[in-house]
Length: 99
Length: 282
Image (tube, rainbow over all chains, first blue to last red; front, side, top):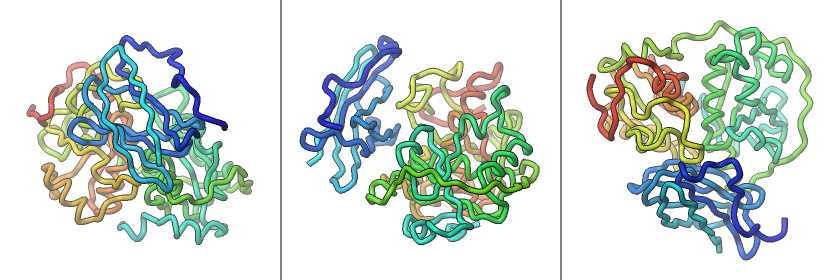
């Protein structure tokens, strides 16, 4: 695996008009991190979902509209929180950079 | 049951990697996860094909379960240690399933695959060969599985614990946020159900919280420890995780998992449904 894929995950087969998609990639330097875990927390900080990153470091959530926090856990790394706002019919792309 | 008998640590698993009577079994929501590396010696169960009837919405029957475990080389006197991704959702589901069919010694790896990975412990590609056995299952243990009529009757009388996320409980989402939003015909929850997301029982790394913390979390949510309990979620996997907490860690009797869960209840004609964050009444 060399370098993170640019442009995010393919949305083929997803009816974007009906979904509030939050997706992105976890990287360390310019390398994707395939064994990280990304959690989606709702506006009150409550856990809503979690996915492991793919071989290319990508992740995706079908969130509802509103404010969310992405919490990323990875081996030998501090936990990173990032706030995002999702809307039905839009795709939010996020890059999580691990130190 | 108790924590000592039902839960093992990653260190315990590492010490037993070469123990022929300990069978590690990986069960994931993402059924391809095993193929991307697994704990040494672990076999795979696919919850969609191995554990579900492929025609009706139900589990494989006793004979099919016997054939499955015999073919995979699991013996009745083996210690089965389950682990998986998603904080052990499907491993807990398989745990409950093994208990449903009466397997003697089943354990869950605390934290599952995530904790193992976050600890940077070894995953390998080699698939073990296990000699076939002649496995005998018991009849399903009806004392740990709830069906829809029983759930409707439990409204206002038993503890109903909805373990989905608050947005699913309130009807703002129909499925967990990493899945497309479809499935049940209606959103919401069963009247009088307490919403205690499964995740309240786990730390960020997927391990279970202490017994004292767990008791406090469910007590604060209104669970009456003197009453019988039915746990449900969307398809019965996250509620297996909470069933494990109640029945195996906290030693509660009369705890059932409603595997039909919201995808069944939310599609039933004529049953009461509540929207919003409050439990509601009948």
